[in-house]
Length: 457
Ligand code: FCB
Image 1 (cartoon, helix red, strand yellow):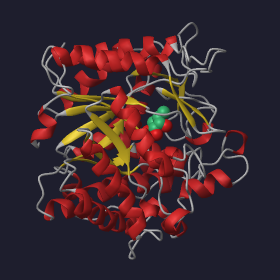
Image 2 (cartoon, helix red, strand yellow):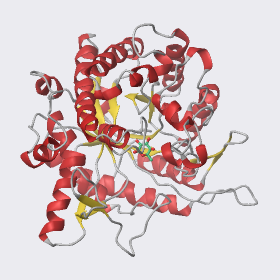
Image 3 (tube, protein in one colour):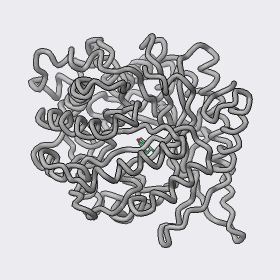
Image 4 (cartoon, rainbow, N blue to C red):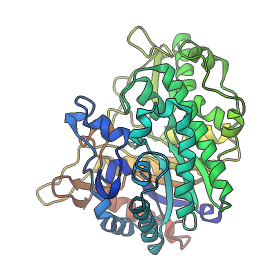
């Protein structure tokens, strides 16, 4: 990995669709998520990403927030349909220029950029042609990645190709909760393969540019816990873990899909989408791995109501503390997850590329947003990440999700994850108590080593 990644990076993360808005400005095309959100019934109260945080126009103000936070790094995503409105071919100059200015603005403030190339916003033109279920999308992704990389690689060393491929594939094509809203497990199996293939092809194309860049995927990884020690529940937890994690990590790190997984997927897919050479393209394509960690999952053997592919069901046990999203709070699960991945993928540097919580935030009459739950959450999870580091995990950075309250996919604007409160009516930004806490934490941990981005235990 390149030098910049040798020091520990404290950062925050965002994604284009969730903050940019300006959905039709300067030649941007629609993404599948724009279209999905505009269709009735797909998002909370019909919220769309059309305006979001208006970051496209307010990016300088948002960079000043990063400055005030004192982060050493910022993870953001590039909107494919802003750069290539039809997904392939013609490059939209003003769209690419936006990211050029953003990167310049980060560099001018001494903040290391980490770029995600694909965070759920597939150009709608490609979605209409079959989206990730089609191999052509993986080829198109490599072309797009190369265009962005050639423009920014002189200033950006850290590249994430796809964010949460399992979520995009299965929530989008299998369970229908995310764009494009399909409920077709056959297409989901193919989509996941093509996302990983797209990652491999994109890395190959970008490496051919001859830069010093490092490449990785940001994967959602949760500890999976059986709801009881009954053998049926233990087996169900193993199936779910295979479905959500091993389906991504095994191909990326050169291991064949395990037999249990293949037999479940065989029930819905003939695997015709896999071609000779694909496994080699996917394997060996990662210099590091990003882990998005939010919660553990408790899994039992499912009845008819459960997941029809893996015959499992997810249950939140009674009495477990949860976030605004209803997700169990479990900082030790982050240490466990990092240690697990370190053991399974030896020698691979790791980043926590997302971690955070949704709370019921509001400005009080004096204008303060006293999000004590988020402070507790971040404090315990930062400690858990550093504990893994002390146990020998090669952890290179921690990115809090998120800089701003934003468009939380199907939850619309109802779930607030930001360190900064956004009044969506006026677009005012109000740093929350957690913003100040994180700022002080970064400064405190950096004092001992004298570097704004260095970690001390
Ligand atoms: C992750 C997504 C991110 C954000 C958080 C809360 O799964 O990658 O965009 O929505 O969840």
